[in-house]
Amino acid sequence: MASAADSIAQGGNGVPTALPPGPWYAPFPYVYGPVFFYLSGIFIRLLGLSATSVRLACVVGAGVLAISSALLVRAAGGSARWSVLACAVMTLTPEVGTIATNGRMDALAIAMEIAGMAAGAAAFGAGDRRSGGSLGAAAGAFWLLAMLTSPRALPLLGGVAVGGVWLLIDRRSRALALTVTISAAAVFLAGGLLWLHHMGVTPVEWALTYLRSSRSDPQNVLLRGQARVWGLDARNTLTPAVIIAAAGLLLLWRQRRSLPPAVIALLVACLVNVGVMFTVANHVFISSSYFVLPLFAVVLTATVIVGRSPGRSRIALSFWLAVAALLGAARVVKYIEVVQTWRDRDPAPLQQFVQRSVPPGSLVFGYDQYYYYAVQHAGSTFRSWTPTPFPPVAFGRPSGISVEGEPSPALADRRFLLWPVKGLPGPVPASFACATPHVVARFSISDAQATGVERIGGFIPALHGYPDTVLYRLPADCHP
Image 1 (cartoon, rainbow, N blue to C red):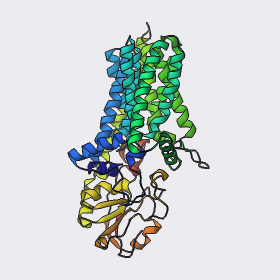
Image 2: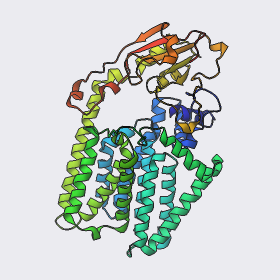
Image 3: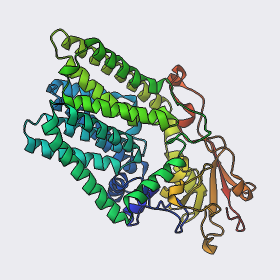
Image 4: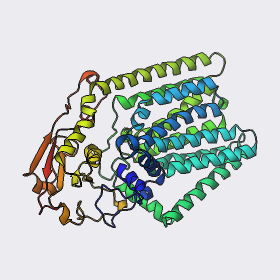
């Protein structure tokens, strides 16, 4: 992700610099969508390439996500105080805490989804068709940006279409719904077609590209013959439990008619989204932000609106204040973990190790989750190698293509492999066996054992830092 954004920042088309050169790859913005990569490219141009500059796009997304949740409550009829509480509750969720700094497009995609939901709810509270049409167009624009940020936004957008059908059927909203739907659909379709024209593909070709990408992503689609993995643990149970509790309050109150039609439609959209995710996705709760956060925002909104009834406002307020306190306590524990394990998380020692051991201008292979920034910061070129089929079929690399590309005589004595002693990728790949006799240096700082608050559960100690690493030199005749 970062190297694709760096390509944009350097004037390229978004083919990651961490992949070998050649005509085999589609630019990442064409496969995922341009929004995240172009925004990250702006931050890289302004601040230089670093984990911080790339993660700023995630921080922006998390901020928009939380603010949009507050605006959704406000648009549905909640007070300003409720909006502030909604913003705080959403900010404190474990899901936002994860995607706000993970260097991926998740926060930005979900932010655009919820921003579109807030604009759509506001359109139905506008009171006249002209304002409703304008806000509907804004909703369409936000949903277009969501689609052009990540394919994982598509199930919710499909759910929005189902919810829109319900609005057209409901007598309370039919006239306004027609105006809002036409405005949103016109902006969404026009913007989408313009992007497809820019890519030079037809809608069918674009859809097939997404389909091929999904087939090779085990975290995106349940592949045939693959065992179901839910990925549910203590951390990602918290928000779903709150959603179920809030939904229980709504069922207990039994006042469906007190909900605005737009909120009911958004509930339908979110439930369709959850249904699709649970049906086709594997490792469901590892990427749960895409169905948890939109549903959480809408259930929170519905609870606020129904809870305004006499005798229920205190129940709703007490419930959400308790949720904020619970989520806040969990976030404090997370920050304590970061402080207790900072020695392992600090990137400076690894960067210093690479700078000491690798001459500038070298070509360094390795697992990008650990080594990309350290190598680039040291003035060398990082080349990604992962033990899974990478990249997906949509990127077009034929089997058997070298991860190095065309060998360069100038780099004959400046090619290296960085590989963890113990870590996610496993042992040194067979294609790099020719490098293993040539150990240059070793790096050791991490301790993967649970420490401090990690002993209470819900943490993954193996991921909180940099693993023990060996630097190998590739001999001149070794071309993986």
